[in-house]
Length: 120
Length: 400
Image (cartoon, chains in turn orange, green):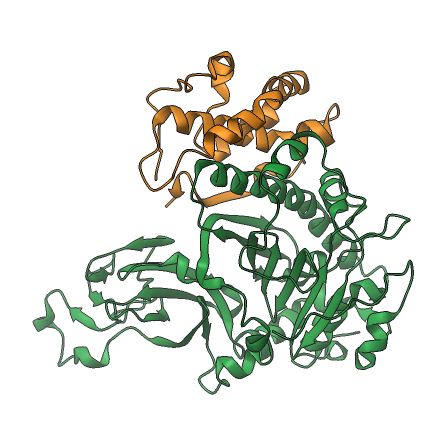
């Protein structure tokens, strides 16, 4: 599976109310990390608090999406939204209100990940 | 693997590990191996060029034709690992046999039949044989059969690719020693590579390795450490404790169990009950987390379903490249993939808290504030590692 770019960030039926958070749907981990450290503490908390009540439903939905075939773009969008939530959770739960993340976070350079594959 | 032992009773303060391994001593350890330029030079000559080094796993070159390059500055070399058409993984000096230029300039790639030099186009097959030379007739009686890539001794153990620059080295099985039997029931073959990171740090490679090689820091170093780290065995007063420590020749294990006082909060409270930590085909000696340090610079750490492989590569006495792989059993659903990302996120935050500590410690130690530093019983894996290093280079040789 690879997803270098998404042509649409539309979420699956049932998750329409989360569509307002589509700016957080981003395949590239470095770009997600940049967003996490650059938004305000308040905005990061708003995203986290809006998504958290849906996290269980998102998990249950994704549990029915097998990986042995190409993932539908809307399912990938939902996965990436949940990945963004998982990535910011420690920042909101442990670092707010002083910061959004551990200071050295942007120094972890991803060479390979399970969504994008190898970077080189 | 040997039978799981009953862990010694967890006490607030104890000398349980030094009593089990009295040969490790209790005295303070020398600062010099961590900061001394001359020690690093001796280490390169007597240790790095002599031992087996793990350069990656078969997951970095899964198919015939796949290759990757691992720089090993401590040996003044770069290793090119290629998966041959015959299925065999081989390692070579990443150097063209024409005029010694670097053969592959990328980090990794895949090819059907040949790799060729960017300088004059000499082409080598996946087994390292020289196959074609541009304008061959203008050379003077060159013999292609003598100009194949320079092969390094390579052995693959359970998917881990090891190379050595020492032609007289002992067989890898002897180097790993009792670790081979210890790992017998770990399902490395069932792993799937989910993530790989690289971190560049201004610190000695042993400082970076030592910082990961104990639990004493877990409640203190940072908020994510103390948050998720509380799932490990703790004393009533909040000290993180190991439940197992063992030496396997040059290599060590420490592990820890589950803390019954730990309660998931926030996102953890939603996701972890839906996807509780399994064992990922890796039964744990410590209960929940096992941390094996393979001398000199490799770590296999297992938490639940996640298996991490670290390599600490020195580039200078005060510079290290830390490579991190995260594996798990192959995700079958998008929810499995979400959980792989969830645990990867925890790892990323914890390691981010570690990085600052590594560099700050190098600054502190390099000041030579004292000639030695002290370690306690929970830091015994560090003592074991340093004592093994001393068998290659005695710190007395460089102490003023």
